[in-house]
Image (cartoon, rainbow, N blue to C red; front, side):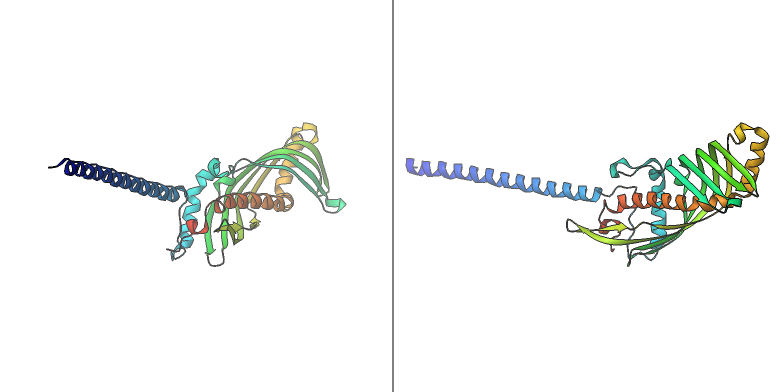
Length: 274
């Protein structure tokens, strides 16, 4: 073989090696891209945490599915979900409630402050009707027990008996129910659709009520005990005054928590078609 042919052969071998390296580099880049795509896909699928259960719009039992999802989510709501910026359901703080009503012969003037409510996290949804076409949710809510405590200042006349005092108030509400209506609207953000819920409309139905006021009549045990008994026998007056504030406070709390979830994930993620 002439030296020219030998040089050509060496060039061909060198060129073949270079092309082989280019092919290997291309395959390596392709595999890298595929792995990146798979990683992105896994990340996208992982955006919806496992404690949020998806309910398909086409599911004929979507009402039960949503109800089950809420019940499974309840333990998380009780403690709060920091990654979604969702506060804990308890304790519920109400800074102040003021009442002033009734004629002079049966007046009811009171101020409650620094109120701490426990028990909202034990809520149970007994019936749910979801209209996913119009994004309207109606349900019956049971609040098995609500405990509250705070400070009171009272000037009340019940059965012509004047009751005045200031001190601590403790209350226990059991078996309270509420009919709830919550409409929602689809909104667009960054090209994606999200569900934004309007403030829920809540009407509480009274169950059993126990109230205890301390330091009535400057702490007189006999008058205090008798007055607490009279107050509990006529607790309907108290409940009629406190219910609108309790309804509004609970409605604001539940609506805010629901929107923290529905505005974090897209509508398709929460309610896929199939």
